[in-house]
Length: 433
Image (tube, rainbow, N blue to C red; front, top):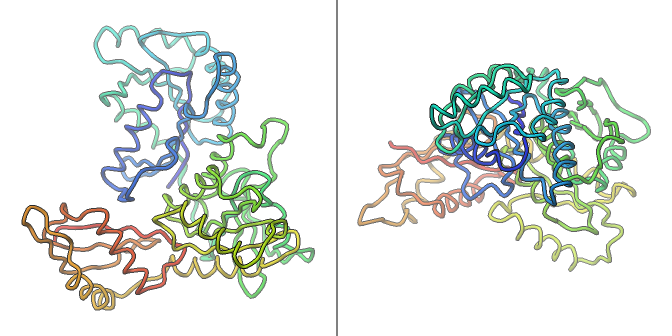
């Protein structure tokens, strides 16, 4: 089960506050990824056991008021295109504004579920004021206060009801997605892979109306390529719009096992590529980084080393990721890229028998136990891999609350030394024994 929920509305109605509240609910319970989301406009949330991606469109609007209006319209259009459900946020304090009416006009034509969320309803008088929002013609509304969270439960109950169930994947083949910023060469790479003699067995209309899963059988490997490139009415959207790239990437990443993150060597591992990297990492996908257009760079062995070092510094602490230098145009190392993707896929589905895991890890804890806190000593007694689609491990100890993130990173590094998890994020839970 998964879907994309977008929060739209004019500036200063409280979109980001609601967004933060909804993703923290998950952060507190499920998400043990250390550190912060690098991209503060995208998060994972879950409610009643259903998980979904949440996009806050507010973070993408910059500029003066008149630019605002144009950008907001454009974002609402994109959100309407891409999301499975839309939260349209308005403010009970200020009442209906012209910009609200404009957004409502766009949303009334939409076939998708739209939830009218009236924010800042934190007393009885405001609850009465909220009635005026019926005038927007979007039917029922949900009064909430995103600051203190009242009303958000009812809203979330309604939202998860309408989200699509993820279709069962028919075959147990790896699903590779090629993601990256526009013009990095994704299409050339995909075409180089397909070659003129297309070995395509079947084309399955994918999980979204515009992502096609193409089944390949080449180089002795069989896999699905989750491809969302080039199936869009180009006129409607400026390709370089950051928000657009993030929306597209979220959709593609969610339906893949391994993400081939393609970047243009002449542009470097810039902020937008890093955002895509952290999206894939937060979604616990396998990752291979492909540096494309390497034929255009003045290169020697030293430059490969320097480039690799620069990327690894940007993605720390998760540096155990394969980096392949390719040229889609000259078909250089295309086969190597797919080979790495298959290896990463295997690493992601690797299961370590409990006995073998304990034999490898318990001596490590004996030798380097977690640092004592307030005179209390943490003893890790037992560990096991959880039965999830990607590597998650539970370590049972007497005082889980005293184990710091730095020690969890130490455990992760030791796991990577002992077992091959290259290209795959690992999640570590400390549990009371």
